[in-house]
Image 1: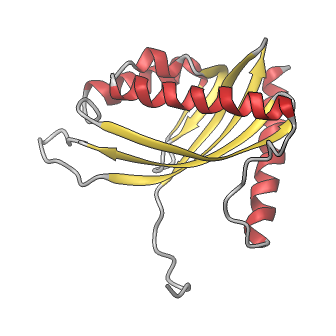
Image 2 (image 1 turned 180 degrees about the vertical axis):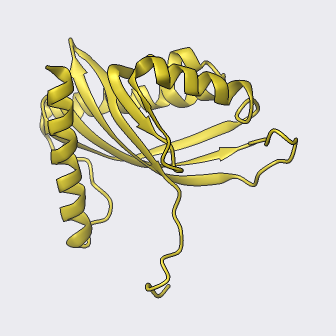
Amino acid sequence: MIKKFAKFTIFVAIAFVATSLTTGQAVAQSNAGGIRSDAENEKVIRALYDGFVKGWNEHDWEKIAAMWALDGDHQEPDGRVAKGRDEITALLKKQHETVFKKTTLSLTVEGVWFVSESVALVTGDYSIQGIVLPDGNKLAPRGGFITSILIKDRGEWLIAASRLMIPSVIPYRQG
């Protein structure tokens, strides 16, 4: 049931984002706007991402992975997808034992938009410093955008789907 619901909400969120982009509203804004339950849930979601950053910077991949729904997924900027908490845990473990071993993450939640009482679309940006390639070469800090769909399951907000994007130049746009 959660899997079907998550797929449906992902579709709704993608449709919302696509509509926002075509109307010139590239960044979703928080819609807490006085609705008490939304304001309270937004605080909880922002605290979840604060915990994510703390877990990342402590390289506690198990703590980070526990923030995903059991059937959630995560897509890296290169298109690689980890499906389910077990695959996400394995991906994070591998990364934090190697290339992300000495990294520091900064993440800013820009917007939290509630699709329903139990589904939220989260947007933000991130920067990672300290990436060391397997050959020992260090990469310059990398930054990008994050879009996630969270579901509230048994009173707990969990990441159902997370998408990372590193911006690139679009040749047909000026500036």
